[in-house]
Image (cartoon, rainbow, N blue to C red; front, top):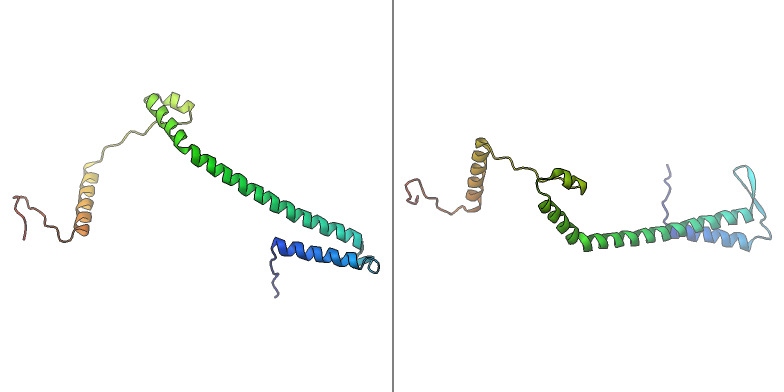
Length: 150
C-alpha cells in the first residue's frame, strides 16, 4: 500500500508554480486536458493553480500575523501582571468580609482555614519526623530525659 508523502507549503507552491510554468510554455500545443472524464482548458488549470498559491501565501501571512499577535498578548500580560495582581490584593483587603462586593469584581472571598483534626496533626508530626530522619541520618535525637542517645 503506497502512502502519500506530505508536502510542506514551500514545496507545494514550487510544484504548483512549476505546473503553471509548464502550461504557459506549452500553451500553443496543449490547449486542454481530459481530467476526471471532462475536458479542462489549460487556462482554467492555471487559474486554479494560481488560486492555490494565493491561498498558501494567505495562510502563511495569517499565521505570521497570529504569531505576532500572540507575542504581543503575552508581552502585555507579562508587563501588567504585577499591577493586576496588586489590584486584586488591594480589593480583597478593601472589601474583606463583603463577599457581594468582591463578587462585583469577579473575585471570591478567601476561604476560611479549617483547623486540622487530631488524626491529621498526628500524621503530619509523624511525616515530619520521618522526613527529618531521612534528611539527617547522623543526627542524634534527645530522649525524654534530655540526655542524648548513644
